[in-house]
Amino acid sequence: MNIAAIYELFLAHPNVTTDTRKITEGAIFFALKGPNFNGNNFAANALAQGAAYCICDEKQPTNDHRIIYTDDVLTTLQAIAKHHRQQFNIPFIAITGSNGKTTTKELVHAVLSEHYKCYTTVGNLNNHIGVPLTILSIKKDAEIAIIEMGANHQKEIESYCTYTLPTHGLITNCGKAHLEGFGGVEGVRKGKGELFKYLASNNGTAIINTDLDYLVPMSAGIKNIVTYGTQNGRITGFVKNDAHFVEVSINHNETLQSIHTQLAGGYNIANILSAVCIGKLFNVPDEKIKNALEHYTPSNSRSQIIIKDTNTIILDAYNANPSSMKAAIENFAHMEGNKKVVIIGGMMELGEDSVAEHTAIIKLLQKYHWYHVVLAGKDYVNVPETYLKFDDASAIANWYHQQQFENTHILIKGSRAMAMEKVLG
Ligand code: ATP
Ligand code: MG
Image 1: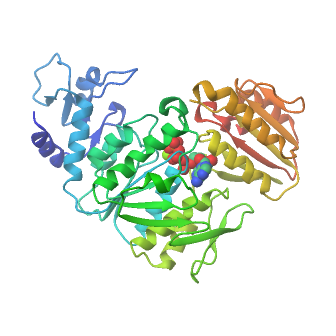
Image 2: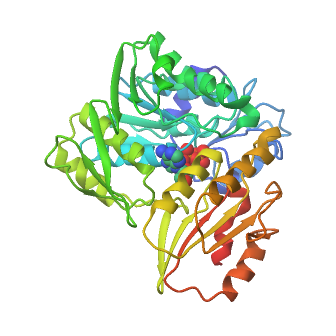
């Protein structure tokens, strides 16, 4: 069946899923193949659960007319998403970068939703399956769409752009994340830069953080550029107070002199400024920008502050890479409190740089005075004698629960695979 015909089915059955555990009555099931599963094997099951149609690329044992064959289910999903995207003549804002994509996406969404009907990526569905599913979740009443794009290798962002057709783009930063797949920091810039390349060739608008010098050459050829930063830009601002929750001030703006966010970590300044910048770009009134930024609360262990008895815990167990780890440690070092405990797990996907990057984190830690440093992760080698090292988060939990911390500040951070939230469990 061709794309136009499948798109007609989608219009009549707009619920799309790739997971038989999430089938709803009348949904269309896209039978994707992954490293550990083959959706084609679940087609009959999907129909039995109420799916209206199954899109398959392997012959099924039945002749059921509800099974639709295509050459490749993933390509079909992306093509249907492109077709859907083309029905909208509205801004599509793409957000990529090494760190802070979801936070930025959620802040931008909060700000724009004060004034427009917005659709955005749910949670972290930011890959070659999540991006098309996000596009397909956009309803007719949409006025703006905000799409998070995650990538760990070259040409991935370029591919998302072919069906997302972004009109606006923001690269939060190009740090040390997914070094393995991208081939070093230069590779990260090249990979993320695919978004700006697309904008340059399609008369798009880039929203640029002037604090990051490298974004300027990356944006060559883009005619429409809007800037923000702590020093220069159309929107500038600074961290007014970094006690527990960041308080931010926007320069030359009376209403936005004091934004009390519910975000932990001064590094969020960039994420907040970008949301203000985009809000202003789309003429959201200042009071509404302030309201949105003050009410946004992060979820998923992403920089949460937990006050427990007399202790303050910063739980940032959602992910970690050398840039976000450095930002979190430096931020923690500059926070108030004189009894501080750092509990950090390993960082994944660093390839041959892994030991060096973990060693750099130990060096950074040694610049400051800590009450305890507790590590878990095989690539922390040459650990100073005064630091504790455990096998994993559960082992740290045993230690943690034997301590009787009082008036202590505790930072907990590590890659998702380290499940550092278990320390508190
Ligand atoms: P993922 O790759 O998992 O989608 P992400 O880019 O969406 O991650 P967030 O989920 O917003 O990033 O934030 C994850 C962590 O990255 C935060 O908890 C924080 O430690 C760090 N972080 C967030 N924003 C920044 C920033 N602007 N600079 C450096 N680190 C940041
Ligand atoms: Mg994310």
